[in-house]
Image (cartoon, rainbow, N blue to C red; front, side, top):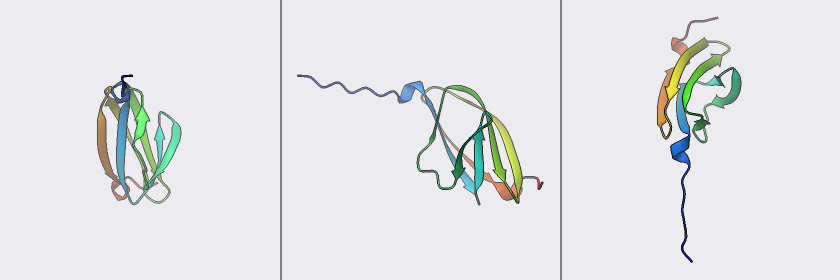
Length: 85
């Protein structure tokens, strides 16, 4: 019997975030995680997404990001550089 191995990583996008000191992470208006820690990349559908990072003392950072199928992007943010609330 032959064994078949299939990977579906080419059908989704992955996003790894490094955030100093930390932030609550929203993707398309939905809270998905508080980073750090990030135990695994965010798995997203290919295409445009609205990324929003929130910290109670340092404010927020909003970015539009377009991810391709099979892409694994790494992004880094320092919340101390955000505009204070």
